[in-house]
Image (cartoon, rainbow, N blue to C red; front, top):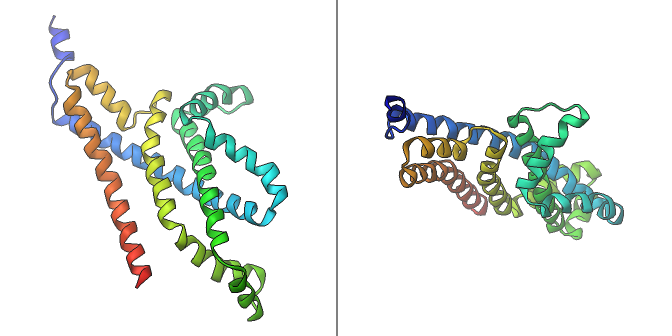
Length: 220
């Protein structure tokens, strides 16, 4: 009886710290996946833009699969089938891989739109000034195009951060998984879910505000 009482205890300061640590894990896996996925997505977007028909027929369908199949299914399938090909990844590693690929699939469309936002006359003007293709890409296309699609990228990044909660199905103790653990022990779902929501807001709001300030600075 005493063990039961000690297990089903009320919410305390240690539980709040537990949620805080889980929020940091959520931030950590999100930052890694978004960083890797963004780099891959920009490359894929460039290939789709420059490759035209070939890239559309080869790379395009693969990216469509990752955009269309629910992220939860991707996580479960990869985590269970990866060991069959010799990839014995922990839940964190599996989550990073799938979240990064999922991010890349979303960013590819955004990046392609950024490349297309730079008109042909502007590119011809840069080439007429003696710039090589890569100089034109680095100094003209990338700065202008990526600024044009920056708000869309922020939306993707915030969405992936929230979607990282799905990694909890693999056993990775991020914010949602920690909330489930505490709800089972304390039987206080409203309080814990409210705190989890507050942590998600604390992670997302500074990013959205900083992005808004960058946009304002670029418009000046």
